[in-house]
Image 1 (cartoon, rainbow, N blue to C red):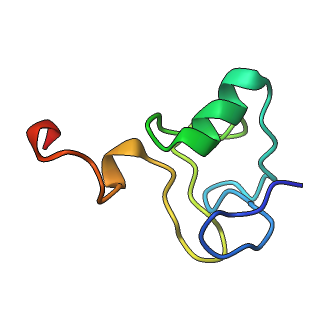
Image 2: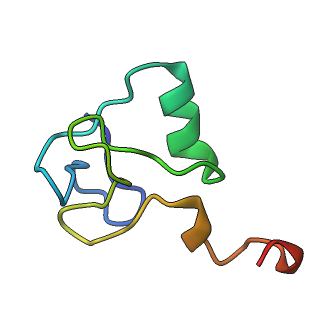
Length: 69
């Protein structure tokens, strides 16, 4: 079971209630690198934690360099 990086609860999609499990190495790396949006395999939308609302979208992270904004 993958846990949310923000709240540590099991990562369940806030859109479709499907438990998130990386389908392969690329999905696993995207989940951890924070540079690639993570898409829910159930509904195809950007993954959002059901419990805390954390959005796994690369555009949402504060530490992006200023030249990319």
